[in-house]
Amino acid sequence: MEIYVARQPIFNKNKKIYGYELLFRGGTTNAFPPIDGDTATSKLLSNSFFNIGIEQIVGGKKAFVNFTEDLLIKKVPTLFPKDVLVVEVLEDVKPHQEVVEACKEISQGGYGIALDDFFYTSGWDPLISLADIIKIDFRATPVDTIREYVENLSSFGVRFLAEKVETHEEFQLASDMGFEYFQGYFFSKPQIVSGKDVSPSKINLVQLVAEANKPEFQFEELEKLILRDVSISYKLMRYINSSFFRRVHEISSIKQAIILLGEVGMRRFISLIVMAKLASDKPEELVRTSIIRARLCELLGRHSGEDINGAELFTLGLFSLIDAIMDQEMESLMNKLPLTESIKRALIAGEGTLADFLRIAVSYETGDWQGFADATRKLGVEEEKVPELYLEALGWADSINAI
Image (tube, rainbow, N blue to C red):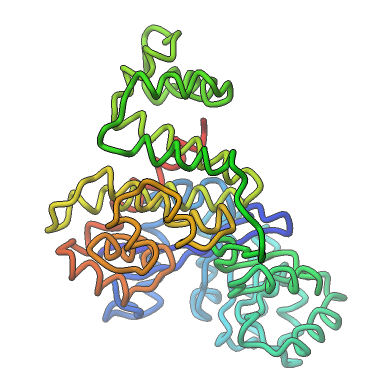
């Protein structure tokens, strides 16, 4: 059985990653394979924790995982590490005595418990008293009802997580109402402020990234640009001398580093370091997602039926969230950058072959399995290969973020 694992970020009030909800599928349809659902879920969990390695998926953060009523009663969560796992009790679980007793034992074992897609009835009081987190769908629940839940249930000592937070306004509203955790893709949307312009220094940095990715890339010019920026110079030397490269002798000059990394390596390095500087006041997940998309798009190009330049695909993924990083409309930013027309078309209008590669990356990370299936079929990418490529992109992103 192929294992498809998507993840949705969960932030705290400071927009720092607290954990990820893991979305498991036994294939690319929005349903489990044609075997018993509990068996499929157990196998997927086991493979993800023990075969793939949960550390590679969540990077040391919490893993929120849905459990069915039967799996709770069988205490399946206790098979997994309590310092990583948060047990999500699905909304269709009936809170009868057997379930309550199982959850009590799970809680006493040191596991965090979250009530998913919560809707209050008095019958849930025993589980609420055991829960650490209550998750409320911020779009499906009326605001007045949400306020009532937060006010009345806070006495249980639970914390509240707002699900499906898709805009910064919703994030702020949920925060003001007393929510401590936030799940959704609000972080990947720009905060457009009328009349605001991008500072020349930031535009220069973005242009540096774009120039570094042009075909007529010049090593000498790049060396001059790097030497002008102390922080980039420091990071380059730290990167080239890291354990990732396993060098016997330490590299001591920018010129040596550039030669050893080569054209492709330097393009990537400049792109990633500059993006991190541009997004210094943004959630770390924003840059991390950009890096994952960049690497995944590049890898997808190698396994597609299209003759596409890998560097162009990498740049496409890297710039896919530049509007959120810069808080500007995508079209406005594209007009200021020396990117190819095919990249601009994909990012502005979602059109062209490049857009289909980005569609695979985005649909996979959000668990949109139908969109994923459509895009992979269109590009001739084997669906079964993508989980492996996605995990490779995650690992690569971790090595970059460690710089």
